Image (cartoon, rainbow, N blue to C red; front, side):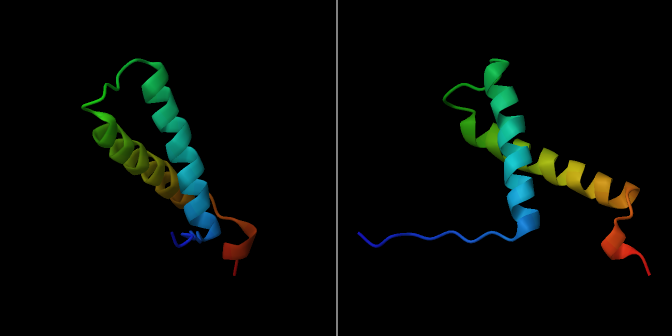
Amino acid sequence: MAKKHLTLQHSESVIVQAAAQIYAAYLCSGLVDDNDKTKYLKQSIRDAITIARSVDDAVISDGEME
């Protein structure tokens, strides 16, 4: 079988980490059953993106300074 390779940009890997933590919280809270895994995984990703966009709107980093 061919080896699959995944390459993420830094911003994508940050979203993955946040989404994984959010998903883990859903799991630990008992909200997720076998029928809802995909639903909560997708929700975790949307939540992580919402958080990232909110931070990007609220914070001006050194690289964004003119």
